[in-house]
Image (cartoon, rainbow, N blue to C red; front, side):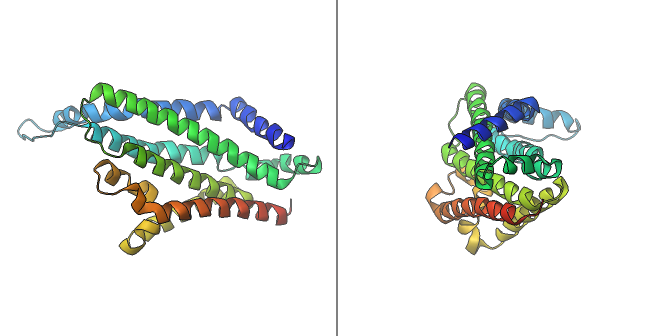
Length: 254
């Protein structure tokens, strides 16, 4: 337990020194601030870009638009940047020889994986919670409606999807020899999830649905319980990926 806490502390200190921790918190806070603001000014922005000879009627934005903008930003910017920043979390230490030094000092490989997973999951949770809280605060300021339904369910689903992305990241980094191989592995997994949603029969089982169904939560078209199979499968895959990371590291030659 002491080794785990020491290594976890090392990860947080490393995140502070490399500025990765600070980058994540600032980036996610900005996403939370800009999402409602962007939704608020979008109709005026679109109207200003149209020729004067063309008249269009644009509906007033609502809290749904603010959360849809948050969903778009957190996926295309937030989670993407997070994954890119930490794709080499294991492969970099292996290539630099740091991993071998830790093992020769008696630190179990299982402890290394679990500590890194806890660090990344805690950082993702804090960053995501910060972003969602800031977004909720500004949404209440800019919009006086409550048209967005099931916001907590939507946020929980995407948070769990982020944890799955982290576990896949660790699995890819455990065998990847470069950041590009790790990103390719994550990209292939993401593509498989997207393709799986083409068949409606497997939508409720597909972990990718935890992210893609975000808009349907907001419009009350789907309930969290309907994706229970996907939630359970995601939890299983998180454990499987972490177990696979440990197994790969035990067999990998350094």
